[in-house]
Image 1: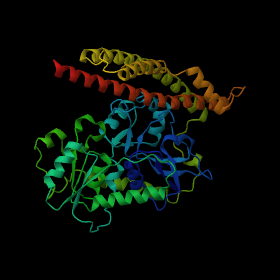
Image 2: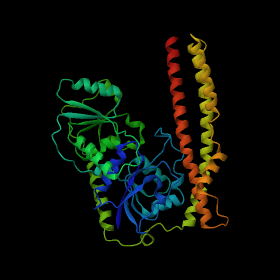
Image 3: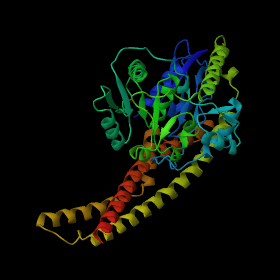
Image 4: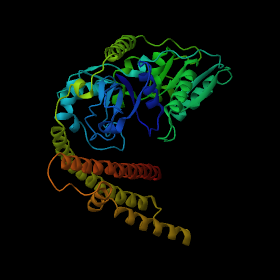
Length: 452
C-alpha cells in the first residue's frame, strides 16, 4: 500500500506543516498529499487505497465528509473544530456531519484517537468510539544539535510579556529571538519547501536554551524534542489545550507580568515527564499501522471497512447539508441584526462622548457624512443574495440532470456543498465586522467612563 499525508495547503500557520512533517516520519516514503478540506474527492492514480495517519484539525468545510474510499485511515490526533468556542470566523456547525453516516464512517474505522479531551467527550456523546491519543507532534524526534549561539525563542507571545523577557535578559549575553508561526498563504508551495522550512524551524527550537510560546504546535514539539518550554497563555479559555496544561510548565500572561513566575529563562528546568507515556503509545500505534499495510495489495473496495453505498451517503449528506444551510441562514440573519444594533449603540455612544456633533472644519463634516453613507451602504449588503448565489453556482457546475438517479444526487450534493462553501466568505466578513464594532463599543465606553 502507498502512503499519504494530510495538508492544509493554504495555511497561515507553520504548525500545520509541523504536523504533516511529524506524520511523514513514520512512512518509508510519501506518495500522496491530500487536501484536508477536500478529502471526499481524493482519488489515487490506479484506484488503490492509500494509508493515511489522520492527525488533523477538522475542519473548515465540515460538509466535505466522509472521506474518499481511497483513504485507508488511522484516526489519531483528531480535533474537531468548534469555531465559536475557538472565537474563529467559521461555520456555526457543531457535530451535525458526524452523526448518521458521518459517525458510522468513524466507527467503522475506530476507535478514534483524539488530540484533546474536548473532542473525545463530544465524539462519545455523539456515539463515536473515541479515546485520547495525543497529538502527532508529540512523536517528533530530536533535530540536529548545532552551535547557533546562546538564545531563547519567544514565539507569538503577548507584546508586554515579550518586552519583560527582553528586559530580564538584558546584559545576560542571551539573545531573545522574537518569532511567529504565522506565514503568508501560499497554496502553491511544494512539500519540499514546506519540509525544509519546518526542519529549519524545529532545529532552531532544538538548539535554544528554552522556548517561550502560546502556540500548541510549538509547545508540543518542544516537549517531544526535550527542549525546555514555558507556555504563557490563559490556558483555561482554549479547548485545544486539555490535558496539555498538566504536561507543561505554564503561566498566565498577567501573572508573568506581576512576577508570579519562578521559571528561570537563563537556566530553565527540565520539562515535566507526564507526556512521555502518551508519546510512546502514539509512536507504537503509528508504527504498527504502517507495518500492517506494508504488504497489503488489496483494492480500495476490498480494503474499505465502511460499507455504505454511494447513494446512501449522498442522500444523508444532502439532507444534512440542507438542514445545515437553514441553520446558517438563521445565524447570518441574527448576526445582521446584532451588527445593526451595535452600529446604533456606537453612534449613540459617539454622541455621548461628544465627537459626533463637533465639526472643527468642513473636512471633518464631509468625513462624517461619507462615513454615514458608507455604513448605510454596508448594511444593505449584510445578507447574501441567495438567488444570485445559486445562479452563480449553477453557472459553474452546469444544469441538473433531467432524470433521477445517482447522477442527479451527485449534482445536488455538489450544488449545496458549493453554497455552504460560499457562505464561509460571508461568515468571515461578518465576524470581522462584528469584532470591529464590539471593539469600538468597548473603546467608546472606556473613553466615556474616563470623561465622567
